[in-house]
Length: 448
Ligand code: SUG
Image 1 (cartoon, rainbow, N blue to C red):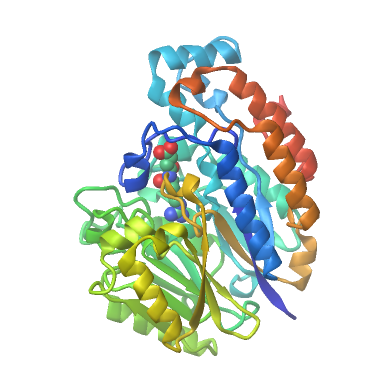
Image 2: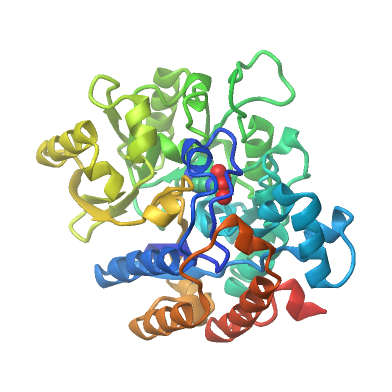
């Protein structure tokens, strides 16, 4: 049976703003308090979805969340009507209001970890929502994420959904941003590669000194157990703590993989030789021929990788078997990265083409092309079981652009977040969106 990789991109929500909320994420910190343009952000994301669909890739869309998250503010002790909760938070604890307004669910690589049915013990596609426990503004995503995923992948015969891991830092889980799957063909059993930043229970593992390591080994192991992965189909690697300290807060900021290919920076991992040989051996036992494309530090420094988001690219298989890299414009404006890419595509290796996208609104918060998408490998039957409302078509694209233009502001500053009208705008827009995407009731305001 044929199988495909489908990308579900996060639709940027109406409250997209620059809150400076992610310590350890250089772009988020350096653009703190800049004025954002939610309309442009959503349009940039939709343009990427449409372009990939036009290139023949299977494309879906993942809905944004209700923000400000008034329920989260109530849990922190703010009371009164919804408008009063927002105004009190603005007066007494602005950083908490900013966190409750974040549109961070747009980075759907952090929504969950997905294991395709060919890898799992019960032959279903497994999803574990990420607890995103390292940052408050992200830790409030998973309940809605779970409801949205269940509305998209509803068939219990094909899909299994697990709630987020326990909400403590020891099980910090950032989802697919630290997970890569290698395979010969998408429908074959593959090798799932889990990259963690530290161990929570074993002090022999090194840890970064400056910035947090968001993903723990124990969280990755728990996800592999929940999904029923076999030992023959799993490889673990520790991220190099030195690169976390340079702003590599997820593995997808320093490596990307697809099919039989891993594209990575020389300094990405600890114990790189062991990791590569285990990946090669395990993939060979699954019939695959592992190919590692290493970017040497002499060609691209870690700092340039973080600035340009070279590795936060989408590595996609073209019909002829060669691969295409979707990169942000920041790669083109970085001389050493662009030189490297020109040489890479001319080298006769697996990566033959580079396409550049303007995703500046998301990039300024540390989210590149790969952050914005969740990959789900599906066979024909599973594909047929996906809620058709979230599958991108020309008609859906046009509808969403019109919807964005009707509901989104083109300018949002921190002061604007204190305006209770923003909540009304967001709820009105999302209520309409659930009808466009045929999701049913997934938001807290729709369930009371
Ligand atoms: O978690 N930025 C996100 C970026 C996530 C990128 N995702 C992947 N690499 N897969 C984060 O740090 C910034 C929000 C703000 O500052 O307003 C933020 O949450």
